[in-house]
Every structure is written in C-alpha cells, then in structure tokens.
Image (spheres, rainbow, N blue to C red):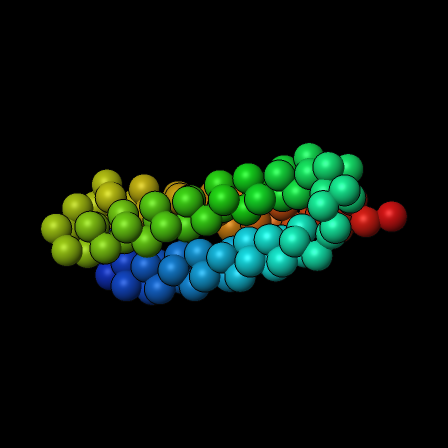
Length: 107
C-alpha cells in the first residue's frame, strides 16, 4: 500500500493556502458587514453571522489539516498523514458548499 507521508509537505502547503484564502474571505465578510449603517445592521446580522461561522469552520478544518500534515511529516506517523488528507478533502468540500450556498443566496 502506498504511503501518504511523502506528500505531507504539499498537503501542509495546500491546507495553509486554503486557510489563507478563507481568511481573506472572512475579511471581506467583515468589511461588507461594517459598510452597513448601525440601524441597518440588525436586518442583515443573521445572514452575515451564518457566513462567518461557515467560513470559520472551513478555516479551522484547513488549519487542522496543515497541523496534522506537519505532525505526520515530523514524527512519520501514517495515521496522522491520512487524517491530514481527509481533513483537507473535507475542508475543500466545505468551501465548495459554502461558496455554492452564497451563490444561491444572491437573487
């Protein structure tokens, strides 16, 4: 059976890049919310809170994948390498889900 350990450097880099992309998205959400006047914020609060929490979950998954990849590479633990790959794929699917839900919300 092939080992996942040789690609852990790439997985760590990919997961970190994904986390950075999500962090930029979080900043855009925050800036967009701050552009509303105080009285208008209450009407859009729930929509923005949902977006921020969804993005935060993806950010956390990507960082967990990067951390597990570094642990797997450093300690040569195959289970951590597989967990890192699984977390990265879950984070990618999560980002796709969040992007699709945001696109569908625009009317």
